[in-house]
Every structure is written in structure tokens, then in C-alpha cells.
Amino acid sequence: MTGGSRSSTDIRGGHIGLVVTIIALVVIASSSGPRWTLIVAGCFTAWFILALTIIRIRGGRGSEAVRRAYVATFGWGDYVTP
Image 1 (cartoon, rainbow, N blue to C red):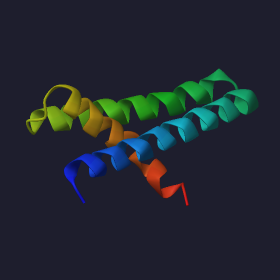
Image 2 (cartoon, one colour):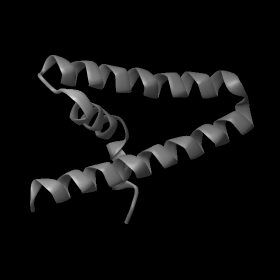
Image 3 (cartoon, rainbow, N blue to C red):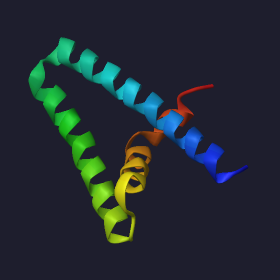
């Protein structure tokens, strides 16, 4: 497997995880209001910022660092698909 196809797979899982997160946030907003929606969204935002900070400290730069933090935050979406 080449580096390019590995990266594409990671990003696809990240996109799936992001979509599932957005759907979950809509469900939370419709059932319990904005308070819990903001708490959950804040947790994902904090996790992304923490991942990006760690990647930057370890030498990641530019769009590659953002991509890696995105995959670290939402890459679990790869496990949701069959």
C-alpha cells in the first residue's frame, strides 16, 4: 500500500466521522437543546486543538499537521462503515 492511498483512506474515515458527529449533534440539539450540543461540540473542538498542538510540537507543519489532527479527531469513522 502506498503512502497516497493510505492518506486517502484516513481522510475518508475522517469525513465519515465528521458526518456522524454532525448527525449526533443535530439529534442532541433537537432532543436536549443547545446546552448539551455546545458541550459535545466543545469537546470535539478541544480534542482537535489538543491533537493539532501535539502534532505541531512534534514537528508537523502546515496542511499536513491539520490533516493529521483531523484524522486523529474524526478518523474513528473508518470503523463505522462496513
